[in-house]
Image (cartoon, rainbow, N blue to C red; front, side, top):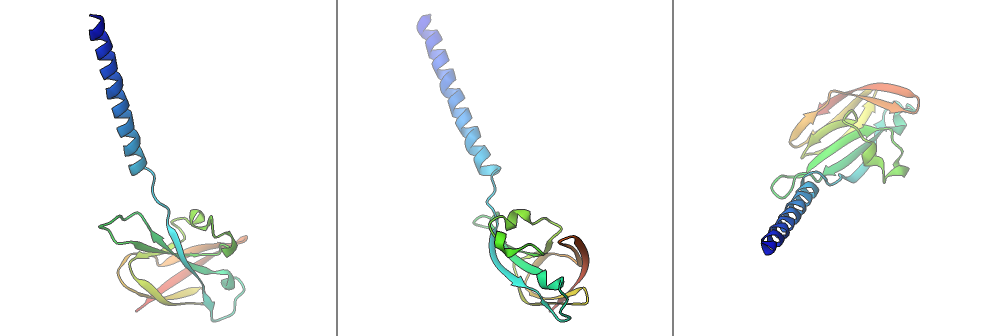
Length: 148
């Protein structure tokens, strides 16, 4: 009778350890997402030489959430973030700064009278018509025109 009880407790401990290790493996592989990589940053050319627009920058990141069978997505953000804090820059982006989500590229971008002209080539999954930019203490609503 005593051996039977020891065997039951030992098998229960092995089963519990197996279930906990599987749950830990599943949690690590499903919850923790890889971060996006910052690929490029471009200063947006201003045709009117406005000082606020000189701070505007287009940031290009690549999303690593796809995996082996899903192509990587390029995410384009327009923001006034300083480029010196490049390490924490991606974490500071929000969905309101996101302008384009797709697999294509931008060949040219400029700003003229609060209108941003973007030449985008490729497949786009999301395009925004306007963006609200916060530069210092000032908010600015900018319209976006997409050219092909």
